[in-house]
Length: 100
Image 1 (tube, rainbow, N blue to C red):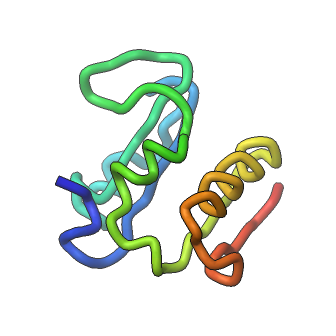
Image 2 (cartoon, one colour):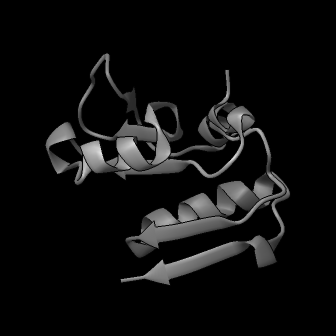
Image 3 (cartoon, one colour):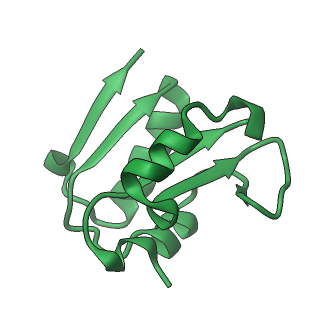
């Protein structure tokens, strides 16, 4: 079942390995385990999703595409996720970006 059917915000956190996940317990406490979604690019684990944030991954995890999306990360990742959101007809005004 998709995480946001419960309402409220979800956090999709992309990292290379599980060792890169920061504040895991705190995020689980704040959001609830089902709303703190981790995806790992370089490590396969039964505990976390594996791969990159793709259009298919977003379709699977996000039920309501008529919401705000906040992107933060390296420019290539943000560009890729923004492209996927665009292909899912997410309003460009609903995408907030913070680059570092």
